[in-house]
Amino acid sequence: MKANYINITILGVLFLLIFSCSEDKIGVNQTGSITGKVVEVETNEPLENARISSQPLTSTVFTDENGEFEIENVPLGEYSVEARKDGYLGGFEPANVTSSTAVNVIFELELSTADNLPPSTPVLLSPADNEVLQSIEADFAWDSTDPDDDDLTYSIELRNDANEEVLMFENITDTTFVYSNLTLGTKYFWQVTVTDEINDPVKSAVRSFEVINAPVDNRFLFVRKVEGNNVIFSADEDGNEFQLTSKNLNSYRPRRNVAANRIAYLQTNGEDVDIYTMARDGTDKQRVTNTIKPKGFDLGEINISWPPKSDMIYFPRFDNLYRINSNGQGLEVVYTTTDGSFISEVDVSENADIIALKTNNIDGYDVSIFTIDFDGNVLDTILTGVDGATTGLNISVTNQLVLYSYDVSGFESSNYRRLDSRMFVYDMVADTTTDISDQKPDGTNDLEPIFSPNEAEVIFTNTSNDGISQKDIYTVEVDPGQGGAERTLLYENAFMPDWE
Image (tube, rainbow, N blue to C red):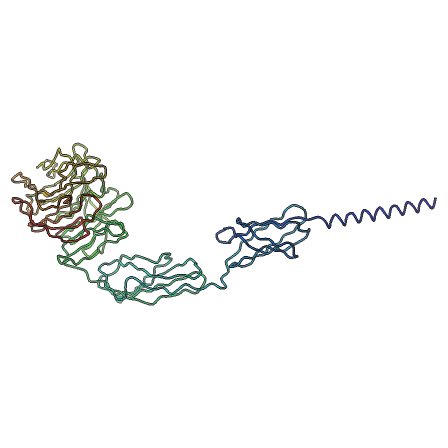
C-alpha cells in the first residue's frame, strides 16, 4: 500500500514537471509583428527608405515607396521603435507586442534645420537705381535663391522723401510686385527682405527711384497692350508718353473732358465693364457706374461719349442709351431703339441737340449709323442696309460732319474680322459722303477715327487686316471735298486714340 502511494506521488511530480516545461516552451516561441508608416509632418507625404529599428533590438527594416514597413517575428514584449531618415529629425514610438496580432505605429518626421542655410541677399533689379519712372506705377523686381530650395517669402519696405509714410508689402511669394499709386514728382527708397522661416531674415541694399511730375500738356490719349491687358497712356506731339492706368487692369476707350479736366474710360471686371474717371495725371480714379453697366455684342467694340461742356457721360446697354453724372448719380435712359437692335457706339453734341448712334445685331452686323435729337427723332440716316462692320463714330466741332469707319468689302465673320475698312466723312448739311482713306495701304484697315480739335485733321488707327498684327496711330489732314491727304505716323503699337 505504501509502495503504491509512493508511485502515485512520483507520477504526480513528473506530470507537474512536464506541464511546467511545456508552458515555458510555448511562451518562448510566441512572436508578433510591428507595422507602420512614416510620413512628413506638414505635408503628410510618405517617406521612402526611412530606417526602422527597435529597442530591445529586433530586425532593422526600411520603408517602401509608400512609407510603410513591417518588422516580423518580434518576441512578445514592450519596445521603443525608432524611425530615422537623412534630413529629418528622428522619431520614437512605443509598441507593446502581446500576441500574434500586428502592432501598428505611425511616425510624423519633421525636417531637420541643423544644416539649413539662409537665402541669398536679394539683388534689386527694377526699378534701376536712380531711375525716373514715366508712370505712377512701379514694377518691382529682384532676385534671391535658397541653397536648400526652401519656400521663400518676401516683403518690400517703401519710403519717400516727401513725408514720413512707410509702406510695407508683405507675404509676397514671387520675385515681382506691382504698385500703382505712387506720388508724382516724388523720390522713393525701397528695400526687400527675404525669409525661409528657418533662418534670420536677409535684407537687400536700399535703392531709390523717382516719379516724374505730372504732364500738363499731353493732349493725346491712346491704348497699348501691355502683358495681355489694355493700358491707357497720354502723350504730347513730340512722342513723350505717360502711363495712366495699371498693366494689371484692362482699361480702354479713353475720352477726355476739357471742362472737367478729367478722363473717362472703360475698365473690365471679369465679364463686366464699368465706366471710370481719373485726373489727367492718372490719379484720383473713381468708378462711375454701378448696377447698370455698359453692355453690347462685344465689350471691346462699344464706346462712350462725354460732351465737352457736360457733366453727363453717355453709354450703351444693349438696345438702350443711358447717361449718368460723372459722380455716379442721375442715371437715366435717353433713347431705346425701335427694332431691338443693339447700340454699340455713341457720340453726343449737347449744345446742338445731336446724338450720333451706331446700331447692329447680336453679331455686330446689320449696321445702321444715324443721328437723332433728344426726343428720339431721326435727323439723318448715314449708313444702313449694308453688309460688313463699322467702327468709330465722331461728330465734328462744327456739328456739321459725322466721321466713321466702314469695311467696304462687306465681309462678315464670327470673329468680326475686317478686310478693307475705310474712313468716311458725312456732311449733314450737304448730305454727301467722302472717302478720306485715299492713301490707305492695301491689305490694311483704318479704324477708330476721331476729329482733331481744330477739325483740320483726323487721328485714327491703322493695322493689317489679318487681325493680329501691330496697330499704329496716324494723323491725316482732311478736306471733305478733296478726300484724304498724306498720312503721318504718330504712335507705334497704339490704338483707340483721343485728341482734345
